[in-house]
Length: 292
Ligand code: GLU
Image (tube, rainbow, N blue to C red; front, side):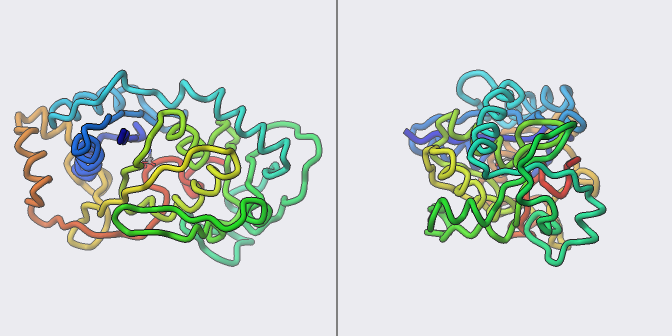
């Protein structure tokens, strides 16, 4: 059975880009008579807010999108994230890192999909750990152990996994056992997601997720990366640049069902178009954004 999910991070109000993503995941499941799940990715303690999670539920109902089962809270899965990280520690695939963002920026010699690529300063340190550290994947070792991998995107075809561009990504944060990459990979498996439907801004991240599936023995879904709603300057919609929130439209009495149908039909509000912005790690716990 096809199982998809919409997995917003409650770091701010949803906007039209989120509506488009939720509709894409919902309709992809319903087309096959499958299940559509809602997972609130609320493990970023510094940025997640309960009120944004609440209004997400209201916004989806307003758009006529009914999810199956209870809304899932990623924060309920923290113990499973910690277990997976412990396994990777035992297998010496992750190492503790104390570098600050400024140190990394100063020492990095290349930029990857999530920002400056970690230069490997702490790689190979596996001794006792005292105090909060970030845990980084030893990418070269992980790629070597996993061997060649491919993944399938329904829209973009077969992809050869190339996670090396990210360098040694953070899998365990100083303030949470699972980074975005680790948490989303584990939770998609736990939720039985068969088709990971999400925006093209996360396309590159899928290379890392495919690698983690292999390292952790998780099932491999297919992916469906859809285009993004972009402003006339080619940038993703963002509340901070003045895109109206769904909550504002809902509270102003706009018709959510009509809006959803317009988005489905490609009738976009003035000034917006569908396309692909720079790829990266979505809204949530990107390595570039997060406290390490
Ligand atoms: N929570 C992520 C975000 O809001 C999306 C996760 C995903 O679809 O993989 O950017």
